Length: 566
Ligand code: PRX
Image (cartoon, rainbow, N blue to C red; front, side):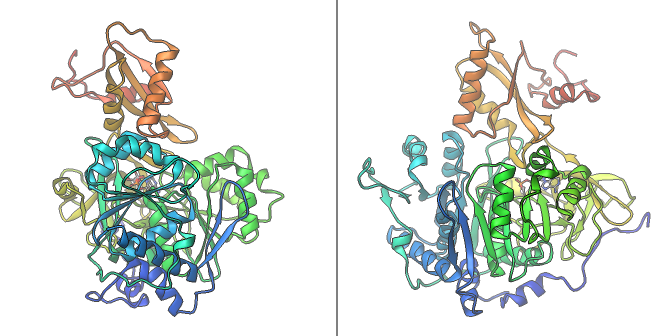
């Protein structure tokens, strides 16, 4: 096969087939919320469970597709009354409560743009994202209100803060804050905004190497890709109980934790409780989870407790398992076979691609350690980073590239069109990851091509961490890198040079760690801080993160000729 194009293109699985199955036409109106609610009702699925929600405590609650329709209509009506207009950005800053999933649909029904924010974000992470999008509304809960109040003055665009669990007997709300109880706001109907395939739908922020997080803007037409990949790769069928373990603060939790499964009328299970293998297996057994989409870090955490931990739980309903977010090593796949008698099917994609691009789908043999082959409707290759030429020799390492367009491709980065355009080369969208393709067309991940840190499947930008570190009174200079970690793939390690008058100590270290946790998020918090006298820099003053990382991993350091002190 050497020298030939290894591009794998599907035959019968096409985007137009997906659109046709959903009854959509290119020029007709299209709204994700309408597809996930009204369409399911039209198909007679109204009484079927849409969401089985299990919180930290108490009994699980079940919402049918009819509930989904009426509760999301209630949200749309309430937001319209609060002055939210189509195309306004509305943030969801919530734990995994039912309001997060159903409010998402309400915002889309109104024609506004949903901006999910991970509820563990600290003030600075929150500020950057709301400030950039100029959101007019944030929906939150009491426990996160303090963080919002502290940045409120800095974001004048934000005119409405909705609190979903306000206690009238507790502390009063302030001006610009309103209470809304989803259960009380139910409405039989609310007109669907006249949106089309190209109308903005979801704005997801993602971290890069430099600058602030960038908002990848998606459109309603993305549903075609999320629907078809959910059907073909997750293999979702009407009688499934499906569990996506990702938080909707990240793209997996919206594309495959809301839109994909509900566009197919499938029941979803949501667990809003911390991780323990015992809790996970017990929940899967109790709710008869049949399809499971998770991440390598979670798989490695389960592996720590051994395959024996599954014994005693009836997991006989489980028939399909998929993974995303980080490289799934062969060991994880082999362990999955031992523990569940099934293969984990790895999938590769990004916030920017909106849906799976490279996949292991049922029917194709899994090669443990490989991400699989391009989804049939997707054209993917590895290309030369300089020219964008496809690299056709099996085993050659190049940049993963996808041929545009596809329905769920981001349409731009909010306020940052220049960076959006910089992602294309030679007619390809360049993902920024390196891989090789073997003689059977299977992709093998090699690594990211930038300094972005992937911790437990979540991307964290080193620049964001370094900027925040500089605001700590003791820090003169800093660099953040991803340090290899056996469970989380990478954890953040910071190198810090202290200001005059400060000495390294456990107290300073702890204070810096906590500072970042509060300002950004627990994920961004350095797990380790190394105090240094100064940082290696290029002659032009750029910190050589790669050098620090190479030292950490014992790799060859490479060309250091541009170093300051060489
Ligand atoms: O580096 C790749 C890694 O996660 C990045 C995308 O992260 P994000 O936009 O947060 O979306 C994550 C969930 C879709 C990619 O550029 N990544 C994602 N999936 C895989 C992966 N790395 C290796 N194998 C995967 N299956």
